[in-house]
Length: 427
Image 1 (cartoon, one colour):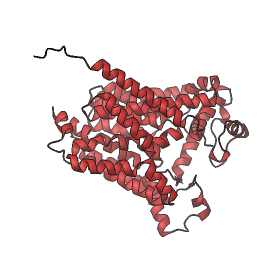
Image 2: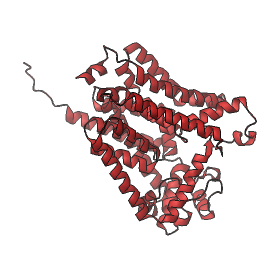
Image 3: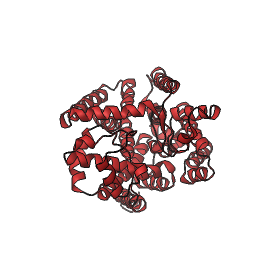
Image 4: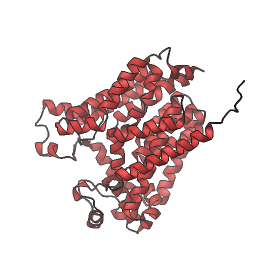
């Protein structure tokens, strides 16, 4: 029997976790806060003009260019004219964000969003830790995630773009984690909000179907219907029509930007290697490329997505909660994201946050080797080297292939018998 009273570590761990989170948010604001992001500018000016009674210029087509008032106002804030992006989110967010956009300046709005994105990164890191049932104090996992975020290109691009994708990733991971923790209503709400920001998370409702989680599925559907009704109630039909026209451009055009990472861009880049004159050299030389999407790319993308969803339906219907924690959840996130018509580097922050899953599934040596490989190839240093060597095209193609390989490793690898993570999950 110990002569010393037992010390409750939970308050100390909570204080340490909050301190790490606060320090990380401050470091992100210090590093990226002065960068004017065209992505967050699109949201700010859309909400700003909506709030000032000019909703007709909140949406505009990428190929037609911005209205003069939008262009002049954006350039005055430091956004380069060539980097002006249209607002491409559901109109409901214009109504929600308009009071804030009218009240504060663009720089303040940008800093608020960046702080929320940094906080979302920390919440996502903790959600992944809980999803995998990993041991260790929370603050230590947050500290590791904070350090990796400053070195990882996906995280860096997420903060540089400062768009809501980091928040969407947080909501998706929380949707999986809350469902597997026995909190189906919270899971459904998180996934529905994510789908209301960017439409593709609606496909993760398949997870609730496969697990026959009727509570989560019902909450997901009801919350989604409620948000859809609010979307139509709060904004005029003209904006709904403009939103549909804007998003249709994303589906009918192919993005071959330097940070575009999905199965469509992979197929197109491979095709260009064998048919270099299929698209003009002028269009392929620009940094921001939207070209008409060929029919074969549409069919290839659709076939791949159906194959991924079908594989989960056929192979994952009767899987246990442990299997979904160890393998299924993170693999589904990666594979569905890669199959989307549009996906950029900031969609994949879950890749480096999922590295601890390898230590659950594999013995220490292969897990360590694969972890260093994943962290190395997705590092900011690797991206900068590829850019300096003019190798971004093969680098991007390699990443898309490796994402899928990483997902299939998570799906197919047997849990290591001596793995601490496996023992924790079996209890």
